[in-house]
Image (cartoon, rainbow, N blue to C red; front, side, top):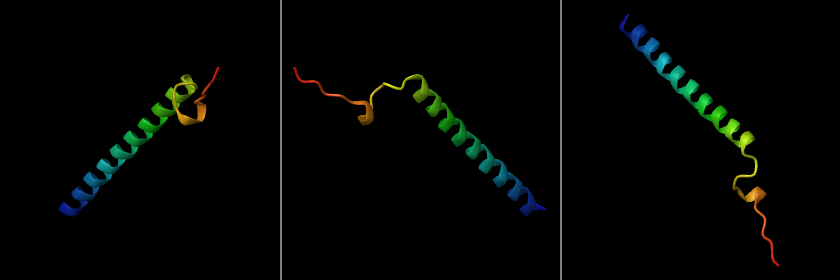
Length: 49
């Protein structure tokens, strides 16, 4: 019985971590969609006059 409780507790902790990671990744993607031209090497441009 004690092992079963520990297994359930471990499963809950893993589930919370996975949900947190998914939320962080999706929040980061939404920010990139809203600000496509903010920084980053891929959008950097150098102009000489």
